[in-house]
Image 1 (cartoon, one colour):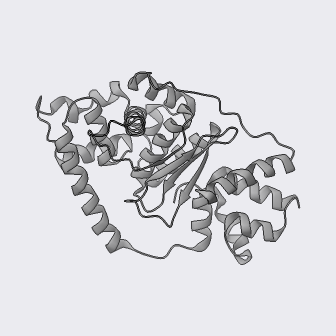
Image 2: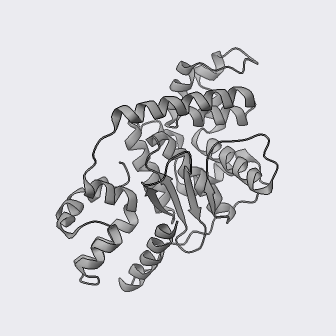
Length: 292
């Protein structure tokens, strides 16, 4: 969290050094707003329509485009690489200008999309938060209620109600049956670009499943994801990690500052947390930022 706060401050300094103004983000939500209305407001704020997201077939393409849209609205997006998902899926900093939404890179790409939307909801409530996206129906504290609200809003933003209820999967599902098959959840995930867990959260919010089934499936998803992670552990190039964690806006501010001799090569290394020898690789790959 300190690292994200530092990067936000550096971004503000870079805007000033470059003679530019940071984008304004002034959209707010009230906690008593209906979930559906709040989800629609999030979508409008970041400018993503269902017709757009339905064309994003790759999970990395979807992640890259959601991040780009969120940043274009005036929110920095970072990724954290050294925290386990069972400790935190994401967090946010709601200060203006340049609020921040952070996702955990150890999470699956579709899971990160849901996390970023959850954090956007936090920002629009003007409440920073350290978040585990799991819901707990026993949580009655104000903090727990905010987390549940942000979950439901993220679900409504990612799976718009009209289009979601119109899918063949939902229409053909046995009425009042709270159990959704892996095939059904996978189809909803594929069509809207969210994770299977996010689809189940949306079904929960629409009262099409139960808390008990949600908790059962969530535990199953987590076990399977951990097993998959163990099998696919690999090495990512340093420049890929750096630009993915820093996000589109911050990376481009650093490169622009360096190109205009407003910052030093040492600053470049400090800001992006990468050795100077990787500068050319960062410049070459910056067009891919946000989608790794």
